Length: 186
Image (cartoon, rainbow, N blue to C red; front, side):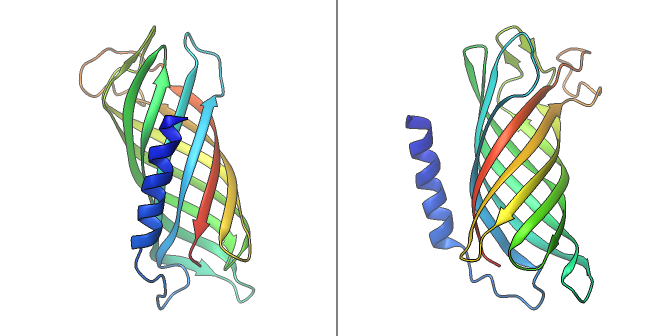
């Protein structure tokens, strides 16, 4: 429970200090802040769990129909902890996400890829083979009228076969089911 205390504290600080989200384009500016938590989606030698806080910022490239449906780009940044094999490491991610949605509230589909920095590469019997990894994700989000949102995403974290950093040649990877609670500014 202690790990959630610092997450809620940081989320409160982020919400209180995010600049006004009004921009010329509905897809630009601060999009959301939130918490994600998840667990192993596939069996490995160890069980994994991940907690993170995140912030998304809308980028200026979007394509929308008159109905409001379209695609938009976001920059997704997150910081958190990865637990596995009795070990805990810090994880930070940053990368682009493509959102398919209707402007405003409702259902959205997301697809993205991030660059990950890990404080450790070994978790019990699992060697992730590097401090610098890649993360791919696909998910569903639902934003309510008054700002809160919920979501699910599937994440895959691995070295992409590159083994950057020389910690091994394998591509073990970790697959996670992630649940999402957010506050949305648009």
